[in-house]
Length: 232
Image (spheres, rainbow, N blue to C red):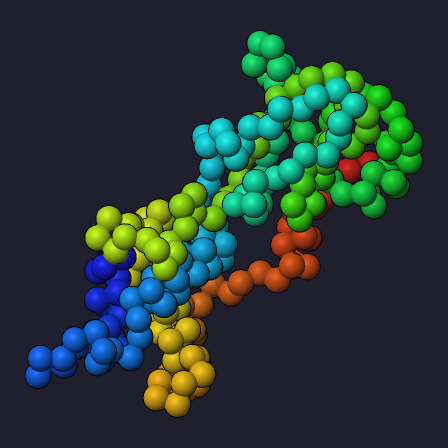
């Protein structure tokens, strides 16, 4: 569905259609620009809650040039969960090894000198905005990531309604309307504010896409996945 079709679907559900008596946009309760922005929110929420957009191919997001002696690298803001990291030879592109996800507490327990030793990376840490290769990186590599992200081109108030389409699969598009209904009825305007309808719409959205993980849960999911048995 295009953004224009999504907006039309919302207006039908919200009974926010132009007046048949020659009315124009001034008769509408909600502006197209606001609806477009809320549909952008809806797609991002859906992508995060349901982990819909897996990426191992967009080089600007999944490929990082690693240089000697530098351990910390910015993570593209659209990538919210790294599920796999591989180290490649920077010159040949050949596989070197898989990296295991970990955190600083685990490293302190099993390898207290990890901060100061020069080595080929064997693990990685995903911080909120960065990827860290523990230790002092011994030489240049290419780091290739796989994981889940938000849309490459988010829907905004400036998006062209006729040509813009959500990146998530079409089968999910119509359920995005629930989020926009939730946001619309939450608007602090006496003419449209309706907390009961807002709550019903949010519940319908969450029934389909699930609850949003909080920051603590996301952090726990990123660290210490059981890739292998740990010996203590």
